[in-house]
Image (cartoon, rainbow over all chains, first blue to last red; front, side, top):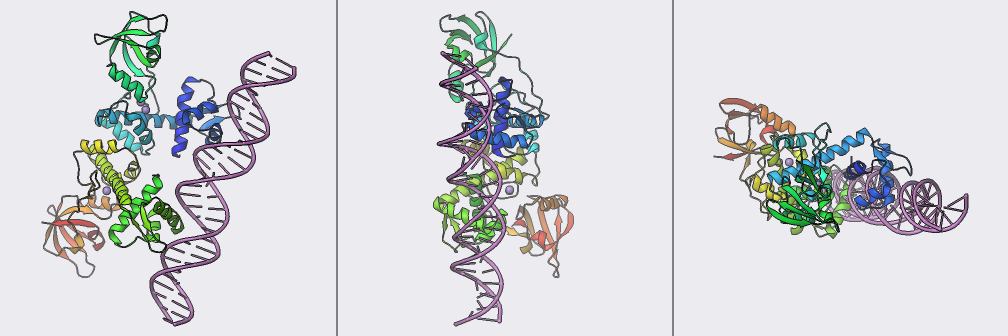
Length: 217
Length: 217
DNA sequence: AGATATTTTTAGGCAAGGCTAAAAAAATAA
DNA sequence: TTATTTTTTTAGCCTTGCCTAAAAATATCT
Ligand SMILES: [Mn+2]
Ligand SMILES: [Mn+2]
Ligand SMILES: [Mn+2]
Ligand SMILES: [Mn+2]
């Protein structure tokens, strides 16, 4: 399994969580920052190896084998992110790029020992669930903050976008995983929200609110 | 810098420690388990990038830039080996292959944070010195056990061969880094040695003795 | 339905990093 | 010194993973 094949499987896995049908060529190319023709090439190779199911012009989906492989990569990615934050004091906006490299290290023993050392974490620093060694992944019950009505109190449990600028914005507003957020009011005009986070009022745009996952109490 | 280029630089670095002149094509090919023609190709590419000095038929040597790059890879390799043994409880014969992968992870911050977490170790689990972040590497004063005369007491400080079979042999004989070894007698015929390690007598062949580094008291 | 636009695939090419076989240079032996 | 062997380089080929341009299939609009 090459580095490149692993990245394709991971991207197909992530895309198939939303687009419940077959994943289309163009969306893979967009995420991979490559060209549709390259995607077609690789997808045909993955189909020969029985990692994906592919019919011309019909999009692609993972086989059980392909899905398991993808989950193991996601497992490693998120486990390493926990290590970087918890053990090496990285901040949550610095870990993704390094984890993109570390997720390709091939050693079952390494990931299992690391998991043990970290105390069997179930979520990564962005609130995403970590698959266990059998590929089982918890479904975390969460809603977007943008779907919450005024007057409700919720807890921040994750981010949809985990790009550094967004995470740094949250740091600046002192919104972190576990923060209690009260939706004070919602503006009809632009759907912006006024929140109370730790006794401080903050106004956030709809774009912000639709990238924050929360749990109702 | 690709994975492959990094491996070439590392191999050239290790070979140039012994073969004090230019490193020859064939020895690189042997270590890399590739063919001399492939080595010539790559060496020419490295010369263009000013990482090595190369004249046809004259062997190859590292430039300052190439040497620093090689040292940073060695630094990462050995630091990760310490992590695997100290933090994740790997045994010293299990770490090399994983470290071969981890040494290519690109993040200065990662290696420096890891170094800090590990308490700035100066040697890896096989007794080899770890270069610091400026590329400075300690020269450890050590001799081969095979050079020690009968009657002397020494301390085991490293291994020359760090292949799993050899390391496992040492485990079985309960010889570890830090063990005190007394050379009881040396057999003229085959240069085998009788040792006293922790109040136990062991006989080892010359081959074993010439792969163990020791420090005289 | 028929025309047009979009998506996807195919065809052909390129760079990296390998390989084998043959040629050239250097080292060694006679 | 000349002949032979060994080492090294060159030439040409292959696979992987990417690309562009063109062709084919599918989707959308009138
Ligand atoms: Mn990530
Ligand atoms: Mn994450
Ligand atoms: Mn090693
Ligand atoms: Mn080592």
